[in-house]
Image (cartoon, rainbow over all chains, first blue to last red):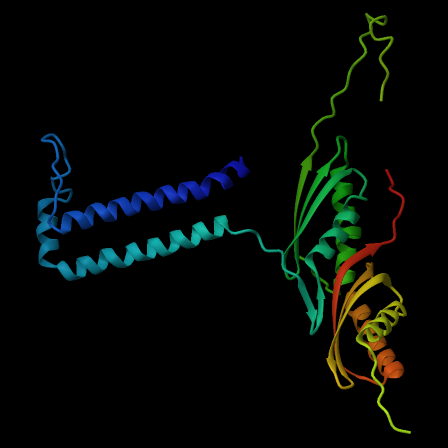
Length: 202
Length: 97
């Protein structure tokens, strides 16, 4: 679902931007004095605002315009910023430990991943460096894994070793634990031994 | 007797690689780049270290070893040593279930 949203969000952003451009074009076209014919039943030519409010706005044209344009520009800025953050690839920064000493994000992530996959009950791990330093770990647990033990070993061994290597007391980490899908098993039925006689477990 | 002694950059690179290997905790296969001329060089090395040895300490050891060895063997002055740790390799241990 998250992947779907991530894929669709740029298209949604483009659709909203397109709708905004359409509105701007329509309003500009209208203000320029050129109008396109509209059917009799259409509400397009009728004022949306209450006539009293419209009169008040006409009498205070400059502040009303400023009051509409400034929030509009702010919304455009925030929308573009949001769209850029949604689309841009995630950064995995290398760590500058001191002047002229750099630890690559790839090296640290690979070392922590190798350690995490050694923890009993962990079937697989994905590790990313997401800060300087900060980690994100996604562990896939096997069926029947002892979650408390995994958690303890993760802190006492995996993250502890990373802290030692980095020479820091605190290493922020986001950990996500997923449970692996149950492995499909073929079950021998007690009543029909003959049919399963040739089947061999792998 | 008159003359000049020039040391080819590839020789300096080999000296640097040798100096890196002398440091405990480094893994073989360091990548070395040497810039500079006239007896004044800047060195950049990419190394693999043993995990979880403290990276700062190992990098300081690499820097000291490279500076000392290059100056001792070639007589060149080492202006700077940039260390990039491109891999951290742990001793493999049996998986406990």
